[in-house]
Image (cartoon, rainbow, N blue to C red; front, side, top):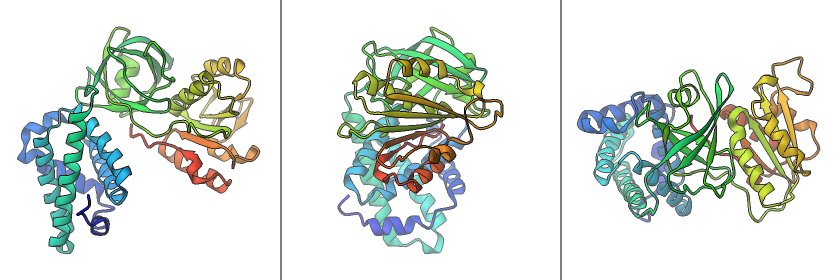
Length: 369
């Protein structure tokens, strides 16, 4: 984006911060009013989609003066959009709706210079996304058969699926999942195992009160059912050049990607000391503890530490998992990997920073369920 002025894009974006819900709602209303046929490409409930739209725009804006980061981001978005059947013509329609939205909410502060910069920036970004989708050697999605479905708790299931063809990914990454029960509704789930020769993928899924896909996967999915899987994404992977010990901090089903990282370290015989701190509300919520204990028994350099916050009778560490980190020796020389609810991730990152862990040694992904 050599001819785009990053300063103008970033400064003008400040006009829209704090109005995400109104802006996203107007954008999609405008898009569907002018292009009714595009409504079929989106899920029935748009709340999560509106949040993801504004988050994606924010990521693009703040990466606009970092060509490498921006190219990686746009390529991922382009490949991800491909599974929805998005074409260049669709990007044109979305561009018109986006500029109309920015113009309306920019009000009197919106200038011709801003309009020109955003128009050119969007055209360049749309071209990069469409090109990434068209040039990708991978399919837009994979069909996968459910081969195991184990209900670990009333609201948590462990699923194992077999893709029809190999789905490339790295331990710590996530893929989007669609069920036949909710067409065009995709939700991201971390893969809970390191890549295997047989290509099987395992997921830990919690059914949230308003989670359509999670509820379907936990309560209505059976062995033999078919799911659709999107491309792997995420940057929370092991650093191949590091020999530092590893700290994994998991909250709830955030255990999934961290378990995959531990499996990879074990399979590659890295012999880097690993502490896996697993937070849960009660002892009964430690849904994968038997598997973890078995892994711990055959891996002398792995220590699994459950932390329970709401069960006074539990014989072990009590508290929220970020708040027990200071009860251990120095973490500052560790590579730290964090996964769980957004507020838990934020609190853990803050605590690790206070405990002297360098920012570039702390790894986490934001995953919107």
